[in-house]
Image 1 (tube, rainbow, N blue to C red):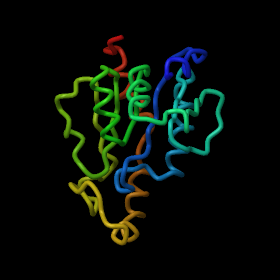
Image 2: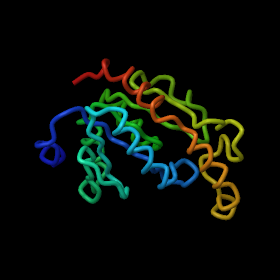
Image 3: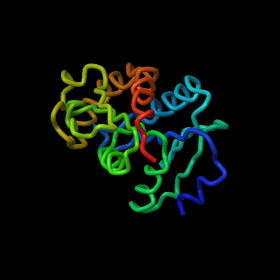
Length: 176
């Protein structure tokens, strides 16, 4: 099913996954939109794929929202990518299983959390170690309301060119 979705979409494909299961580990939606647009501007050869809602229109953005509707399809999607940029650990595990180059963006744990994944480059958002929920996988909704602006500012200072450079370092090692 995933192969059929991608059949008429040639070129270098990068999955962008800005949402995790908790807001603490997710890129804010407005910044995810800016980040996606910047990635597309930085590399005119990539096709950026998303499988979650993102209010973005671009000729090289492939929106598969609603079509990747099971964990199995997500696993297959990751395996068909040339690279993955994610905040979600499920995606990093799938990228490792399929030898797909990946950059994982961390906001609450150290980017060295998965040193045994040779196709992954971990990157902490700027100042992640000093953020209020460092080393915690999630926080209560009430606490999140008090700290979300600090996280928004940290995500806003993340450099898309740096993320893309890390992914480019890993892509030559892709095993098909």
